[in-house]
Amino acid sequence: MPEHLPVNRFKLLRSATMYVLILLSFIMVLQSCGGVMTRIVVQDYEFSLDYFSFSGKYLDISKETENARATFWKPDGSIVFITGRYSNNVAAYKLSDPWQIHTAEFLHDEEVPGEFQHGLYFREDGIMMWVFDRTSIWEFTLNTPWDITTRSEGVNHDLSHFVLRGHDIDFRPDGTILFIDDRNAGAVFEYTLATPWDVASGSLTYTLDISDQQIEVRGIEFLKEGIVMMLMDTERRAVLQYNLTEPYNITAATYAGAFDVSKQTLQGRGLSFSADETIMYVTGRDEEKVFQYEMKKN
Image (cartoon, rainbow, N blue to C red; front, top):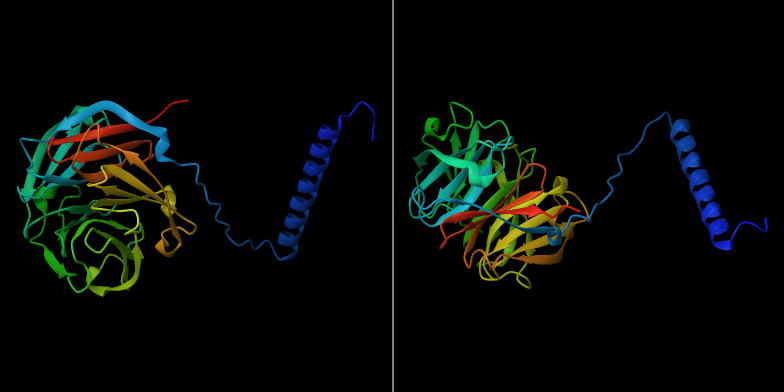
Protein backbone atom coordinates (compact mmCIF):
# COMPACT_ATOMS: atom_id res chain seq x y z
CA MET A 1 0.00 0.00 0.00
CA PRO A 2 1.41 3.41 -0.96
CA GLU A 3 2.48 5.42 2.08
CA HIS A 4 0.67 8.59 0.98
CA LEU A 5 -2.75 6.85 0.75
CA PRO A 6 -4.63 6.89 4.11
CA VAL A 7 -6.02 3.55 5.30
CA ASN A 8 -9.68 4.65 5.23
CA ARG A 9 -9.34 5.94 1.67
CA PHE A 10 -7.69 2.69 0.65
CA LYS A 11 -10.57 0.66 2.11
CA LEU A 12 -13.07 2.90 0.34
CA LEU A 13 -11.24 2.46 -2.97
CA ARG A 14 -11.09 -1.30 -2.47
CA SER A 15 -14.83 -1.46 -1.69
CA ALA A 16 -15.66 0.60 -4.76
CA THR A 17 -13.49 -1.65 -6.92
CA MET A 18 -15.23 -4.77 -5.60
CA TYR A 19 -18.63 -3.19 -6.28
CA VAL A 20 -17.65 -2.44 -9.89
CA LEU A 21 -16.38 -6.00 -10.39
CA ILE A 22 -19.62 -7.46 -9.01
CA LEU A 23 -21.67 -5.16 -11.25
CA LEU A 24 -19.63 -6.15 -14.31
CA SER A 25 -20.06 -9.82 -13.44
CA PHE A 26 -23.81 -9.32 -13.17
CA ILE A 27 -23.93 -7.66 -16.58
CA MET A 28 -21.95 -10.54 -18.09
CA VAL A 29 -24.42 -13.04 -16.65
CA LEU A 30 -27.30 -11.10 -18.19
CA GLN A 31 -25.57 -11.08 -21.55
CA SER A 32 -24.96 -14.82 -21.36
CA CYS A 33 -28.68 -15.31 -20.73
CA GLY A 34 -29.61 -13.53 -23.92
CA GLY A 35 -30.15 -10.16 -22.32
CA VAL A 36 -33.26 -11.30 -20.46
CA MET A 37 -33.52 -9.39 -17.19
CA THR A 38 -35.99 -9.89 -14.37
CA ARG A 39 -37.50 -6.62 -13.13
CA ILE A 40 -36.12 -5.74 -9.73
CA VAL A 41 -38.22 -3.53 -7.48
CA VAL A 42 -36.13 -1.30 -5.22
CA GLN A 43 -38.11 -0.13 -2.22
CA ASP A 44 -37.84 3.55 -1.34
CA TYR A 45 -38.92 4.41 2.18
CA GLU A 46 -37.37 7.85 2.18
CA PHE A 47 -40.91 9.19 1.75
CA SER A 48 -42.09 10.32 5.16
CA LEU A 49 -44.90 12.37 6.62
CA ASP A 50 -42.23 14.16 8.64
CA TYR A 51 -41.42 16.10 5.48
CA PHE A 52 -44.84 17.84 5.46
CA SER A 53 -46.15 20.96 7.18
CA PHE A 54 -49.32 23.04 7.00
CA SER A 55 -49.10 25.62 4.22
CA GLY A 56 -51.71 28.00 5.61
CA LYS A 57 -53.87 27.39 2.51
CA TYR A 58 -57.39 25.99 2.61
CA LEU A 59 -60.71 25.88 0.75
CA ASP A 60 -64.01 26.82 2.40
CA ILE A 61 -66.62 24.24 1.32
CA SER A 62 -69.38 25.22 3.76
CA LYS A 63 -71.81 26.44 1.08
CA GLU A 64 -71.67 23.36 -1.12
CA THR A 65 -71.28 20.37 1.23
CA GLU A 66 -72.44 19.29 4.64
CA ASN A 67 -70.35 16.88 6.71
CA ALA A 68 -67.76 16.62 3.93
CA ARG A 69 -65.64 13.53 3.48
CA ALA A 70 -63.35 12.25 0.72
CA THR A 71 -61.54 14.36 -1.87
CA PHE A 72 -60.37 13.19 -5.29
CA TRP A 73 -58.37 15.08 -7.92
CA LYS A 74 -58.37 15.17 -11.69
CA PRO A 75 -54.82 14.02 -12.62
CA ASP A 76 -53.76 17.48 -13.83
CA GLY A 77 -54.87 19.15 -10.58
CA SER A 78 -57.42 21.39 -12.32
CA ILE A 79 -60.51 19.99 -10.55
CA VAL A 80 -61.06 18.61 -7.06
CA PHE A 81 -64.17 16.60 -6.12
CA ILE A 82 -65.58 16.30 -2.60
CA THR A 83 -68.31 14.09 -1.13
CA GLY A 84 -70.89 15.48 1.28
CA ARG A 85 -72.42 12.95 3.66
CA TYR A 86 -75.45 14.97 4.77
CA SER A 87 -75.79 16.88 1.50
CA ASN A 88 -75.80 13.56 -0.41
CA ASN A 89 -73.67 15.01 -3.17
CA VAL A 90 -70.38 15.16 -4.96
CA ALA A 91 -69.20 18.75 -5.44
CA ALA A 92 -66.65 19.82 -8.07
CA TYR A 93 -64.31 22.81 -7.74
CA LYS A 94 -62.16 24.23 -10.53
CA LEU A 95 -58.70 25.56 -9.68
CA SER A 96 -57.11 28.49 -11.48
CA ASP A 97 -53.70 27.31 -10.23
CA PRO A 98 -53.51 23.49 -10.33
CA TRP A 99 -53.18 21.76 -6.96
CA GLN A 100 -53.36 25.06 -5.05
CA ILE A 101 -56.52 24.53 -3.00
CA HIS A 102 -57.02 28.20 -2.14
CA THR A 103 -57.53 29.01 -5.85
CA ALA A 104 -60.52 26.66 -6.18
CA GLU A 105 -63.97 27.95 -7.11
CA PHE A 106 -67.22 25.99 -7.04
CA LEU A 107 -68.04 24.53 -10.44
CA HIS A 108 -71.14 22.34 -9.94
CA ASP A 109 -72.41 19.47 -7.83
CA GLU A 110 -74.46 16.35 -8.34
CA GLU A 111 -76.74 14.55 -5.92
CA VAL A 112 -75.96 10.85 -5.78
CA PRO A 113 -78.15 7.92 -4.65
CA GLY A 114 -77.79 6.12 -1.37
CA GLU A 115 -76.87 7.75 1.92
CA PHE A 116 -73.85 8.39 4.13
CA GLN A 117 -71.58 9.02 1.13
CA HIS A 118 -67.95 8.78 2.16
CA GLY A 119 -65.40 7.36 -0.28
CA LEU A 120 -64.74 8.64 -3.79
CA TYR A 121 -62.69 7.42 -6.74
CA PHE A 122 -62.45 8.25 -10.45
CA ARG A 123 -60.77 6.10 -13.06
CA GLU A 124 -57.81 7.85 -14.68
CA ASP A 125 -59.74 8.50 -17.90
CA GLY A 126 -62.53 10.26 -15.98
CA ILE A 127 -65.24 8.05 -17.48
CA MET A 128 -66.03 6.00 -14.37
CA MET A 129 -66.76 7.18 -10.82
CA TRP A 130 -67.33 5.23 -7.61
CA VAL A 131 -68.96 6.56 -4.42
CA PHE A 132 -68.72 4.47 -1.26
CA ASP A 133 -71.50 4.75 1.32
CA ARG A 134 -70.33 2.79 4.35
CA THR A 135 -71.31 -0.78 3.35
CA SER A 136 -71.87 -0.58 -0.40
CA ILE A 137 -70.37 1.07 -3.45
CA TRP A 138 -72.11 2.96 -6.26
CA GLU A 139 -70.65 2.77 -9.75
CA PHE A 140 -71.33 5.49 -12.32
CA THR A 141 -70.42 6.11 -15.94
CA LEU A 142 -69.82 9.71 -17.04
CA ASN A 143 -70.85 10.54 -20.60
CA THR A 144 -68.38 13.42 -20.56
CA PRO A 145 -65.09 12.63 -18.79
CA TRP A 146 -64.74 14.37 -15.41
CA ASP A 147 -68.19 16.02 -15.72
CA ILE A 148 -70.24 14.60 -12.84
CA THR A 149 -73.42 16.23 -14.17
CA THR A 150 -73.36 13.68 -17.01
CA ARG A 151 -73.37 10.63 -14.71
CA SER A 152 -75.44 7.52 -15.28
CA GLU A 153 -78.12 6.39 -12.82
CA GLY A 154 -75.60 4.18 -11.13
CA VAL A 155 -75.28 0.56 -10.09
CA ASN A 156 -75.00 -0.47 -6.44
CA HIS A 157 -72.80 -3.28 -5.15
CA ASP A 158 -73.55 -4.49 -1.62
CA LEU A 159 -70.43 -5.32 0.40
CA SER A 160 -72.06 -5.69 3.80
CA HIS A 161 -71.11 -9.38 3.95
CA PHE A 162 -67.66 -8.25 5.11
CA VAL A 163 -67.66 -4.44 5.54
CA LEU A 164 -68.91 -3.22 8.92
CA ARG A 165 -68.43 0.54 8.68
CA GLY A 166 -66.23 1.45 5.76
CA HIS A 167 -65.38 4.98 4.80
CA ASP A 168 -62.93 5.42 1.94
CA ILE A 169 -61.70 3.43 -1.05
CA ASP A 170 -58.73 3.24 -3.38
CA PHE A 171 -58.06 1.08 -6.43
CA ARG A 172 -54.88 -0.46 -7.70
CA PRO A 173 -54.19 1.57 -10.90
CA ASP A 174 -54.93 -1.42 -13.15
CA GLY A 175 -58.34 -1.92 -11.55
CA THR A 176 -57.61 -5.41 -10.24
CA ILE A 177 -57.88 -4.64 -6.51
CA LEU A 178 -60.26 -2.47 -4.49
CA PHE A 179 -59.06 -1.38 -1.04
CA ILE A 180 -61.52 -0.35 1.68
CA ASP A 181 -60.80 1.02 5.15
CA ASP A 182 -63.14 0.02 7.98
CA ARG A 183 -63.06 1.75 11.33
CA ASN A 184 -65.31 -0.72 13.18
CA ALA A 185 -63.36 -3.72 11.93
CA GLY A 186 -60.05 -1.94 12.54
CA ALA A 187 -58.94 -3.16 9.16
CA VAL A 188 -58.12 -2.51 5.53
CA PHE A 189 -59.79 -4.95 3.13
CA GLU A 190 -58.26 -6.23 -0.09
CA TYR A 191 -61.04 -7.02 -2.56
CA THR A 192 -59.65 -8.64 -5.69
CA LEU A 193 -61.57 -8.15 -8.95
CA ALA A 194 -61.51 -11.03 -11.45
CA THR A 195 -62.44 -8.51 -14.16
CA PRO A 196 -60.63 -5.16 -13.79
CA TRP A 197 -62.89 -2.33 -12.59
CA ASP A 198 -65.89 -4.68 -12.24
CA VAL A 199 -66.75 -4.67 -8.54
CA ALA A 200 -69.35 -7.38 -9.13
CA SER A 201 -66.50 -9.77 -9.99
CA GLY A 202 -64.72 -9.20 -6.69
CA SER A 203 -63.95 -11.40 -3.71
CA LEU A 204 -62.34 -10.68 -0.35
CA THR A 205 -58.76 -11.95 -0.48
CA TYR A 206 -57.09 -10.38 2.55
CA THR A 207 -57.84 -8.37 5.69
CA LEU A 208 -55.08 -6.23 7.16
CA ASP A 209 -55.48 -5.79 10.92
CA ILE A 210 -54.68 -2.17 11.86
CA SER A 211 -56.46 -2.23 15.22
CA ASP A 212 -53.22 -1.67 17.13
CA GLN A 213 -52.77 1.74 15.44
CA GLN A 214 -56.17 3.03 14.31
CA ILE A 215 -59.07 4.35 16.35
CA GLU A 216 -61.42 5.74 13.70
CA VAL A 217 -59.88 5.38 10.25
CA ARG A 218 -61.68 7.39 7.55
CA GLY A 219 -59.42 7.77 4.54
CA ILE A 220 -57.02 5.75 2.39
CA GLU A 221 -54.58 6.48 -0.43
CA PHE A 222 -51.61 4.60 -1.87
CA LEU A 223 -48.44 6.47 -2.87
CA LYS A 224 -44.98 5.76 -4.30
CA GLU A 225 -46.36 3.31 -6.87
CA GLY A 226 -48.03 1.26 -4.17
CA ILE A 227 -45.29 0.85 -1.56
CA VAL A 228 -46.73 3.48 0.82
CA MET A 229 -50.28 3.47 2.20
CA MET A 230 -51.76 6.47 3.99
CA LEU A 231 -54.78 6.37 6.30
CA MET A 232 -56.72 9.25 7.87
CA ASP A 233 -57.60 8.60 11.52
CA THR A 234 -60.28 10.95 12.82
CA GLU A 235 -60.02 10.15 16.53
CA ARG A 236 -56.23 10.18 16.54
CA ARG A 237 -56.39 13.43 14.56
CA ALA A 238 -53.55 12.16 12.47
CA VAL A 239 -52.55 10.66 9.13
CA LEU A 240 -51.03 7.19 9.52
CA GLN A 241 -48.29 5.85 7.25
CA TYR A 242 -47.70 2.20 6.38
CA ASN A 243 -44.82 0.90 4.24
CA LEU A 244 -45.18 -2.12 1.98
CA THR A 245 -42.33 -4.36 0.86
CA GLU A 246 -44.24 -5.19 -2.33
CA PRO A 247 -46.40 -2.72 -4.33
CA TYR A 248 -50.09 -2.89 -3.37
CA ASN A 249 -49.51 -6.02 -1.28
CA ILE A 250 -51.01 -5.12 2.09
CA THR A 251 -49.98 -8.49 3.52
CA ALA A 252 -46.52 -6.92 3.63
CA ALA A 253 -47.57 -3.64 5.31
CA THR A 254 -45.87 -2.29 8.43
CA TYR A 255 -46.77 0.79 10.47
CA ALA A 256 -44.25 3.63 9.98
CA GLY A 257 -45.62 6.61 11.94
CA ALA A 258 -48.22 9.38 12.12
CA PHE A 259 -48.65 13.05 11.21
CA ASP A 260 -50.67 15.25 13.56
CA VAL A 261 -53.35 17.51 12.00
CA SER A 262 -55.08 18.58 15.22
CA LYS A 263 -53.99 22.21 14.89
CA GLN A 264 -56.11 22.48 11.75
CA THR A 265 -58.96 20.04 12.39
CA LEU A 266 -60.30 17.89 15.21
CA GLN A 267 -62.43 15.89 12.76
CA GLY A 268 -60.32 14.94 9.76
CA ARG A 269 -62.64 13.05 7.39
CA GLY A 270 -60.85 12.92 4.03
CA LEU A 271 -57.38 12.44 2.59
CA SER A 272 -55.73 12.92 -0.81
CA PHE A 273 -52.38 13.82 -2.40
CA SER A 274 -51.20 15.71 -5.46
CA ALA A 275 -49.96 13.72 -8.46
CA ASP A 276 -46.31 14.38 -7.58
CA GLU A 277 -47.05 13.48 -3.93
CA THR A 278 -45.59 16.71 -2.54
CA ILE A 279 -48.95 18.11 -1.37
CA MET A 280 -51.42 16.51 1.04
CA TYR A 281 -55.05 17.52 1.56
CA VAL A 282 -57.16 16.82 4.65
CA THR A 283 -60.89 17.48 4.91
CA GLY A 284 -61.99 19.09 8.17
CA ARG A 285 -65.62 18.25 8.93
CA ASP A 286 -66.41 20.78 11.66
CA GLU A 287 -64.26 23.51 10.10
CA GLU A 288 -65.91 22.86 6.69
CA LYS A 289 -62.58 23.31 4.97
CA VAL A 290 -60.01 21.34 3.00
CA PHE A 291 -56.53 22.02 4.36
CA GLN A 292 -53.34 21.90 2.27
CA TYR A 293 -50.04 20.54 3.58
CA GLU A 294 -46.82 20.81 1.58
CA MET A 295 -43.55 18.95 1.58
CA LYS A 296 -40.87 21.04 3.25
CA LYS A 297 -38.25 22.47 0.94
CA ASN A 298 -34.59 21.85 1.77
